[in-house]
Length: 42
Image 1 (cartoon, one colour):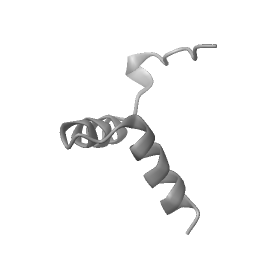
Image 2: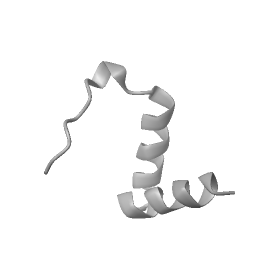
Image 3: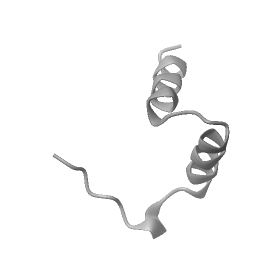
Image 4: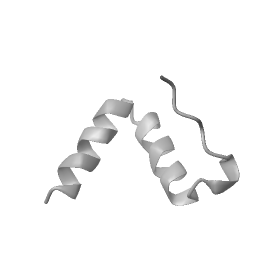
């Protein structure tokens, strides 16, 4: 099942910038998710 994409206006510009930077560094979505999970558990 696919998730709906939120209205672009509702996106946090800081998060968008960070995700773009991660993508530019060659990180995958899964790597970003794992990093966030790891940091949020500490």
